[in-house]
Amino acid sequence: VLDLAPSLVSFMDYELGSRMTRKIKMKNTTSKEITILSMTSKDPQVTTSLPKRTLQPGEGTELSVILNPKTPVYVIGEIQITTDFEPFPALTVNYNGTMKKVNKK
Image 1 (tube, rainbow, N blue to C red):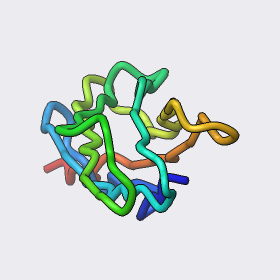
Image 2 (cartoon, one colour):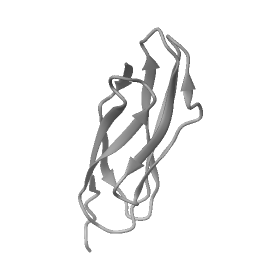
Image 3 (spheres, one colour):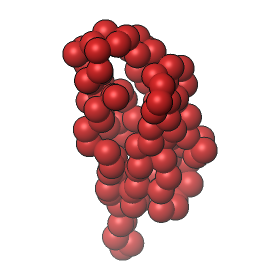
């Protein structure tokens, strides 16, 4: 199984138009090689980046989760991670965030 930490990514107090990146540690805790086939978010404001897609047993890497907010809304959703590892080929990482309050003068 791929061990993910944290399982919830928080984008608290984000600023509209300001890109924010959070990191998730991934580790292959199995005795077999695991390949990440895809990572998807339904929200186009949230994207991912992964430098290494194939992990050997015991090997780890970092997944970047990037928020590039275009609209002033509460951000909530999940990233679906698909692997070639059976019997658990799908994993989910949840994310949320709120926009920073701006004081009007």
